[in-house]
Structure formats: structure tokens, C-alpha cells
Length: 67
Image (cartoon, rainbow, N blue to C red; front, side, top):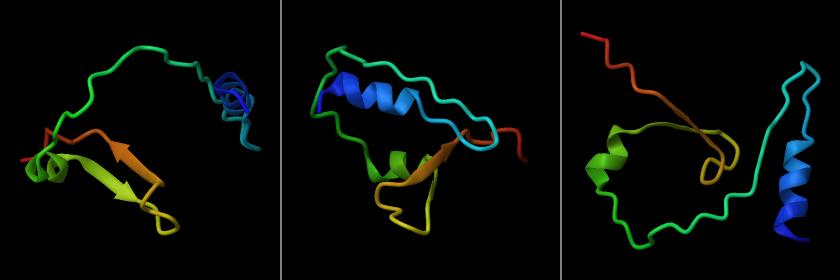
């Protein structure tokens, strides 16, 4: 299966409630070996799913307006 096939499969995903997914293949080159500290990871608003939370999770914006 090619990357283009996977992108097209993702792009054709629809939910019963009408959510449509848009996707495109990103062919940019990215620097590797960037290290993220434990403190930086702890600051992210990540919520792992109950089922397979090691690869299924939600990242939400931080609410910086709280007192």
C-alpha cells in the first residue's frame, strides 16, 4: 500500500454525524533527534484514550486564562 493510498483512505473517512476528514501527504523534510524534556512533555495537555492510550490520545490547547 502506498502513502498516497493511505492518505486517500483517511481523506474519505466520514462519520454518521457528518464529520469529514481532510488529509494531504506532507513531503517536507524535518530535523530528527530533537529532544523534549520531561518538563516540556508534562506541560502538554494530553489525554490518553482508555483503549490503546499509547497511540490514541487527544491534545488540547492549554487554558492560559485560568487564575
